[in-house]
Image (tube, rainbow, N blue to C red):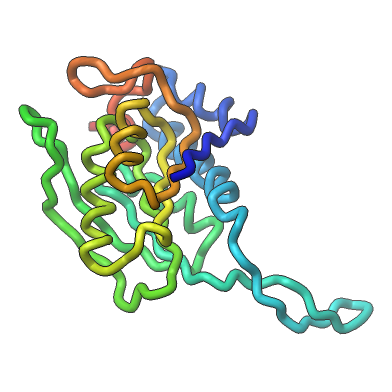
Length: 209
């Protein structure tokens, strides 16, 4: 399973501002949207295009211009919601599902509390989105939920802004057929399973809680 680190200078600049503890929730949300849109360009680099007939001001032409895949966006609640608008900027016609997972405080294990998938997902490209990949528990569980509904891993792309090596390794081991797109991989997790140096709790910073 390829791990794609999007090291574009503008993404890295925005990520550094995102990390600062002084960045207020409004700016934090806007930066998450901007980074997500930039990452979505990278994640769709290999999409196939269908040829269409158009007429320019000078002549008729047959050009590649329509993405063949339907797009489904699946945010992991709650922090994944902050990335949805960034994806919709690029794919305004995409459908959006939701997966609700929280990390149990003592065991750090993922617990599902909500799951809503769009109907007729066959053939669509699916973007699972969550700002943080820490232990990998939530991402692995979300991917497993999709696979039990008949979605092959080859159609799933996992987009996250920040990851820990432990989380990347966990997803690689559990789901080697799923591509990971990340803006940066930090050094490690601390005892509370927060990414270091990280940016804190993305959901709390995003929503001011």
